[in-house]
Image (spheres, rainbow, N blue to C red):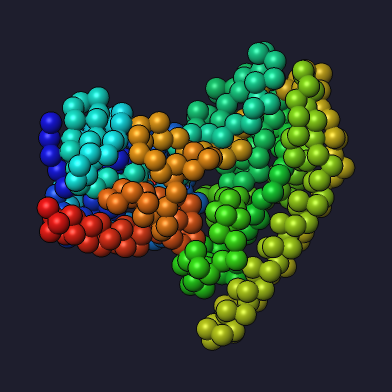
Length: 414
Ligand SMILES: Cc1cc2nc3c(=O)[nH]c(=O)nc-3n(C[C@H](O)[C@H](O)[C@H](O)COP(=O)(O)OP(=O)(O)OC[C@H]3O[C@@H](n4cnc5c(N)ncnc54)[C@H](O)[C@@H]3O)c2cc1C
């Protein structure tokens, strides 16, 4: 049995940022990672994916992008390299190939059992990611076995798919990007659209992420929003990171030949039942977009940028063509379904009573009810940017301070 001050579970950006902050504070710790550093970026993303955040927006405690293309978007190999170099830069004590199998409370701290031995620790930080596993609706099980079903986590490239049409369910960042790529491979693509967040890649001469950063939108905290549960379940941004900085929205996809349909409601054999809601969901996304761009325009005036930046460019609303409310997959030659329906988390190893009825960790800004147990990297955990590479660092600084206090109190009491 080995002993350490803190066990961090997960060696992605969140675990590494936490490790960096604990290193700075002189806290003895280990990072236990079941795969390699940045494993999710290596093995749970498709081949062509680039970050949708620009390279400059990858600031971590003590680390930032210094490459030749700050306004570009990193490939997965580049993100992995970026995080590997980060881990090396401060000698992060990462134990790769080590899966945490259980975390139990014991007097004065925790017992952490892995497939490579047991650790005792005064504190544990769960950094296993917000996008732990795909969230696939139960109706997927009712689809015929003849269809290939994938989630973005398992999709790599269009060659994986059988010839024929493809139904992509979900029109957030992953859904629109995969619909585009699969359509470009020569397949007919139907995209089932639910609630989504439309954004232009660039606006008035700057990347939209630059505007969100400059305006402080990404810094908004849990206290700044009316309904944190709603804010935490916001769809991901409909963006793509491409060298031409092009926007990818439903209008672009429809013009290219992707068929837009409403939300997928039910499966009945080969038939899928769709909502008659496409006009409403696209209109809602357009209204939200207009409100945001209005906010950008007002910010530009207040910041004295007006006159030195391009004028506001009109962004036409998406005008969906009439869509069917049911599709017979077999009759239309649709042979594959991609469930781009979001992610969920699961913590089978946590033998500590901190999960709510949905299986999510109960926490306040990453601090759980169990003294010494923390979580980091969840969506809107403390701020809107908490789950982004660029945002996790601030949370790590806060939690490291909290954790240090916990260790001091515990050691003093002992
Ligand atoms: C498709 C996609 C695109 C994204 N694009 C961007 C983007 O452009 N910009 C941006 O800022 N963010 C983006 N994100 C969001 C976020 O940055 C990523 O999800 C990122 O991987 C989160 O980092 P993390 O460290 O919190 O979790 P992860 O990177 O998922 O790391 C968790 C680690 O925990 C390990 N682990 C899990 N269980 C155990 C266990 N029991 N024992 C030991 N180890 C374990 C895993 O192997 C993994 O390495 C994107 C997310 C997705 C899904």
